[in-house]
Every structure is written in C-alpha cells, then in structure tokens.
Amino acid sequence: MVFPQKSDVDNLNGERQESLKAGVLGAVSFSIMATGIALLHGLWVESLIWDITWLVKGAIALLTGFLFGVTYRYIIRTDQNSHLNDGAVLAFGLVRAGARIEIEARFTDSFALFIVLGVESVFCFLFARLALDLALNQQWVKPFKSYND
Image (cartoon, rainbow, N blue to C red):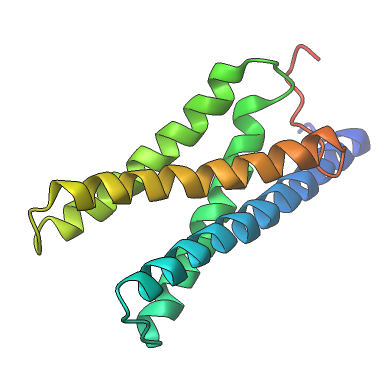
C-alpha cells in the first residue's frame, strides 16, 4: 500500500485553498454584476418587487459565480492564451443564457429578450473574469500549475 507523501498532501491542500479563494471571488463578483443588472432591469420596468425569487436568484448567482471561479482557475492555469480566457467566459455565458432562454421561451417569443439574456450572462461572467484576472496578476490567487511547470 502506497501512502501519499506529506509534500503531496500539502500541495493538494494549497491547491484547494487557492481554488476556494478563486471560487469565492468569482461568486462575489458575479453576484455583484447580476444584482446590478437585476436592479437596473427592475427600475427600468418599474416593477422592483422584493420576494423569494430574489433569494433564489441570489443563491443561484453565488453558486454559478463560485463554480466559474474555480473552473476558470483550472482552465487558464499558467498559460498566456487569451483564447482560453475568452472561451471560458463565452462558454459559461452561452450555457447560462441558453438555460434562461429555454425557460423564457415558454412565456414570450421576443427575440430581443433572448439577446438581452445572452448579453447579460456574458457580462456577468466577464466581470467575474476581470476580477479573477486582477487577483491572479496581483498574486492574491495563485494560478493552477500545469504538470509541465
């Protein structure tokens, strides 16, 4: 039976801590943008009603941002490839937008609404990405190291 070395366990715990930091930053930044967009939308249509759906949407935004933050850290690693960064934002944004469009399509056939939902999703992930990129550049969050590093 082979037991992991202490350095392997320390490395694994360090990676988990960095992923947790990236996840929390992703959750907070994504939620800030999603809340701002929701408030603007509520003020624009003059129907800012606080109910349980705000709590549900907030919880979903936190979870979505957390998962994006953790995944983004693993996607970009220590590579300097802007296509990875942009692709992560676009992939997450389109998946989230697709789910929202599928739900909204039952209640409306407005093509403009579908575009707005897509743009909102991409902007939320873009904001989270910018926050994560800043944290990575400032070494507040350390990038995931590739096996070749």
